[in-house]
Image (tube, rainbow, N blue to C red):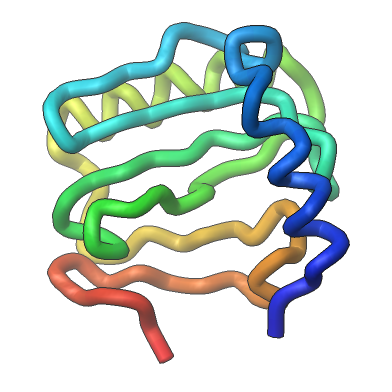
Length: 114
């Protein structure tokens, strides 16, 4: 189910977030929006969000982008959606890195989908 090689590449970038971030991380209690460059994705940049009503508060990769400019715009859009509580009832993990092996939809108030 999981691609171990891709997971290892993702882990290699964990310590250098400050160098990879596109914009300042948005944090409001348990809510978070973060956009950064990645080395393990099909696209070079991605936005992750965390919200207590989705995926048990763990991150969901909600968007991926080819350029830094697209990532900056996407980051601001996700912050606006988070602030205005416009996430809807579903969050789609786009699986940019291919670690999950498929896109996964997280439903509001539910844990990991089977």
